[in-house]
Every structure is written in structure tokens, then in C-alpha cells.
Length: 443
Image (cartoon, rainbow, N blue to C red):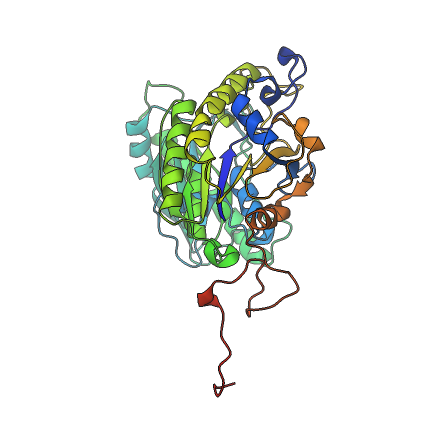
């Protein structure tokens, strides 16, 4: 059987007073999602472990069965999505333009983390900090648009350095340091020190550039998510399925490219129309022979980050309307297993964060999931929601359980104690993966 994986980014949430103590998912009118829950087996999942807030790429990395210590981090994945070449030994960071204010003690207070709508100015400024050498290390900044870019450090640097972006406003820009777990501390110390010097130099260069009247001064670069060139075992080898992806987020695109997925981009500003187009294309990809199709919608995550549970509820209702296309084009296929879930919880409700003000954070609550199709044990859950899923027959899963559950539902799982191939795999090997015994053949 083939597999359709539907991810609604940041779908899980917390109870909101404005919604009578329900989460936005529970408060939304979702007849199509509820129908899916009623037709499937339900449960809850921690992409890592209880209480750990994750972002999309690490959550998907773990859900697809790769070890956490093999995660290259977002910096390199963003570079991959942007078509930037990463050489062995390169360290790649996400690097964003920002507006800061120098304090009397020399600290830089972060005033604005997202520079939008000033493309011409950003591209001009990027040229002033494009390349610099410090202590034998070469820094190269590549601007990617919307105030964002990648910073490459070459010539024997370490990626085991900390972020300088504090993930919030009115906070000090952080000093990069060596990570406690660094396996080569002298190289990491040198890399962190050189990065701090580069950022000081970049601040000076940006301050000296001609100022614009279009908004706060663009006078700083903030960095995070340093990592090396990614090295992944292809998804098709790890799980035995030729895979395609319809991602809706740049960093997810980078991950899927590195995993060897066939990738297609679809963009529509309307959540319902966007999902309908993705589902239609997913049906075509499955007909074309792909055995695993990953569909990723960025909604309702942006609304959750704005701390607006009412808008989150409305976005979920729009997604549910889009799910009508699933029932029309995909649900009738008897050879299809569908899993619908989310990659993490994005709260639209925080105890000490004002409504309508942006928050970059996620939280560590479990997320609901449902599997429909084949011979799954339909469990009697009638609604798709965080608390309803708690009574489902799948129980409480972790990310490492994700792919085994899907393989088993798709009747692709092999008995674990058998060993037909040199590499241990959970899936049943294809004919081209086995070595037949032949009489008179070489041993």
C-alpha cells in the first residue's frame, strides 16, 4: 500500500479563554477532519520526548527515523533550499538582518528581527559585508531575500558554536560561545571568537552605509543554527518507498531535498485553495508511481505565532474545507494509507505574552494524529482534536514510532527478527534488494 502524509504545521495548541477553554482545533468546525478521525485509528505523539519544543525540520527529521545527533541544523538546510552549494568542511549559519540600538555598556538591544519590504536596501547592504577574513577563517555572506541569508565560514571552522539571535525583541544580541558538547574545543573557541569579531565588523560596516528613511536602521546581522554539510541516508533506502514532497516552508524544502525526495512547490495565499491544490497534486503523484507523498501546509502556524487563537480557529476551518478534496480524490483509493498530524505545538496562548504580539517559540505538548485506510483498528474516536485523540487506540507515541506505525499500517513492515539483507531494515525488501542463492555460484 502507498502512504499519504498530511502535515498541518503547528496545528496543536493550548486551551484559550476566548474559546471557552477549548483549543483552536477543538473549537473549530471541522466535519472533514472529524470524519477522518472517525474512520481511523487515533493517538498522540511527542516528536521527541515529553515537554521538548521542536521546530519543523528537527521534528520531521526525528519522525522520519534519523538520529538526533545526525541533524545538520537549519542553517545548512536553508542553504540547500536556496540552491547554495555547501562544500565539505563548510559551516553554514542562518543570518538575518536586524535593527539594534547600542547601549552604554556596549550591548546591542534588538529592536527589529524581521526586515521586510526593503529589498533594494538589503541587497545593497549585503554587498558591504559579503566577505571578510578573521584569524585564518573566511566569512562569506549570501543574501537570500526578505532580510534573510546564509553566512558561510570556511577553512577549518567548527559548527559547534551558539546562536547570537535571542529569539525576541528588547533583548540583547547574544555573544557566540563554544557549545559544551564540542568535541574540538580549541577549534570551536576559535570559530566563536572569529564569528563575534565578524559580527562586530559587520555592525560597523552597516552603520557606515548610507542610511535609509524606510524604517529603523538596518545595522546588525544576527545568526543561529550553525551546522555542517548534511549527510543523509536517502529516505528511499531507509524506508523502501520512492517519495515525493509538496512542502510549504523553505527549511522543510531543504530537508526534503537532502533526504532525496522529489520536490514540487505550490503557493497560494488562501489556506483552503492552497490545500486543495496540494491534495490534487498529491493524488497525481501517487498515480505517477510515488509510494510515499508528504504534503506540508504552513497553516495555521503563522496565526499561532501572532498569539491570536481566533484567527487560528478560522485558519483550521479553512483547512478543513480544503479537505473535501481529500474525500473526493484520495479517500476512495483502497490501496492508500493516510496519516494526518502536525509537527509540533505552536501555542496561540501564553500566560505572559500579549495577544497579537509575535512569538517565535513553540511548546512541548503532544500532538494529535490519525491513520486511516487498509485494515487499521478503527477505535471509536469521533472528533479530531488534542484531547479526543488521547482516548485513541494508538496511545502515546514518540517520533521514533512514526515510520514503523506507517509501515505497519501500509503492510510493508517485515518481521523484525528476520535478516534478508546486510543492512537491517524494517520494510520488506524489493526484488532488486535481495541476493538470490544460486547452485554452483560463488560463496
